[in-house]
Image (cartoon, rainbow, N blue to C red; front, side):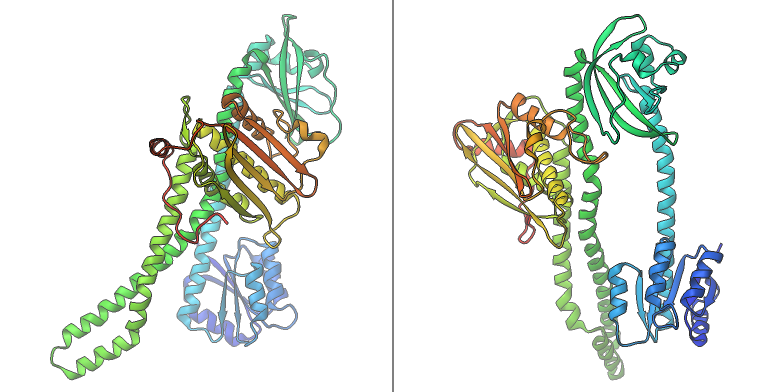
Length: 544
């Protein structure tokens, strides 16, 4: 089936020319104005590409393409104009209404190339949408399997009637009811202290006593969060026997690390994509440059003693602009190598962060840990804050678990970025995040300060509680600071504290015990081997 292309221009001669340019490759529809084009999109779509003139009677090209983008976002849009004033066209490009901008008169080959590129973009978007739909179906099935196979009792119940709607195998096994009997109960028959939550409640955690089918009561911790189930308001609950608390805490630490990696994956891909794009552009330029150089060299080699052929070779050399190629090619190579180094830094940081943890404490260079976390989480903070570092160049080593300390620093940095964003900061009005390391009495101190929204005094004492979060549903799990507190205090014998002023920002301070002296060269070598120290940051690629 041919891809459909919609041509919009108030000049019939231009529409006829466009048809000739494109030939029989596409299913072409032509209309003479914006209103007619919107009608065609509604009645004859879908169209892969729409090519519109800028200045037309009635609805001009800018307004038409904006409406087309709103109603038919998958259709790729090209804007044509012969007017010298390009302000409106530039605005359309900046607003994202168009894929490409062409000026009249446009060469047939350029026009065909632009339409072909737009069709390719449309096919890529359509293929990605189909992949996303298939992934969604597969994800739903995976979640069903995870629900059924989860080792802890899980159930879903109606938020209004409190009737059980779904239970997993662990709930049936541990509570002693058959599945059919369970689905005939309400929450209050299992949890005598159950009460409907207030309207608009979020995730909640409470300790209570549950009654088993045998009549025995067990103390459990129940985590509840609102969900939609079959188009009705419902709650998903997980009950954990408190005797399994230690095991659960270990699982949560690993889950938090994997969750962080998953949340950062899209941002890391974006950070890699930028240098990859200019690597590709420079490589294409070099390919063309060497092609031109090769052609000119071949003419000179074949010229022999023939003056006419020498003149032809000189003309080709002038057209190829050899001086320009010889000047730009080394720059393109340098930029390409710079991009490769940048990608390598990002990949190395991600590998280091995802490296499995260890139980034996080793000398940890916290300056390096800070640099790793800044690289991994760059996409979380760079759009909302400027990041400054003040790292002591001779900071003492601390005995620690590198993976867990990386997780602590990551949680603090991501929380700082979210706090700045919550304060209404944007790329046009950035906040500031400052990370400082310095020696402290008997160890070292790391502080992460932000100019975000601050934490109300009434809840500051709860920020390290498990499952406590002020973020909206889906943004926070309430585990980040709880895990940071457990890692710093329980696993490393340190302290973590905060200072906050509402509306001005928050500073988290982590203090860790050290070895009592500066890091020796042997300790640095050992820390580097364990942490896989990143290459030096090239000039101009710092965290700010």
